[in-house]
Length: 57
Image (cartoon, one colour):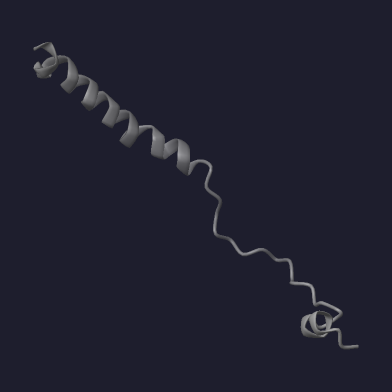
């Protein structure tokens, strides 16, 4: 049975793992963002959330 011959399938397996472990992580990591905090301060809400949900003035 030709599908049990390891010669063509082994090289395909090795090449696929080289691609997945060599090239894909560098492509993915180039799109990651730094974990730097932003300098924008959060805005304070003018109305209280509980007052809005309960209908209180």
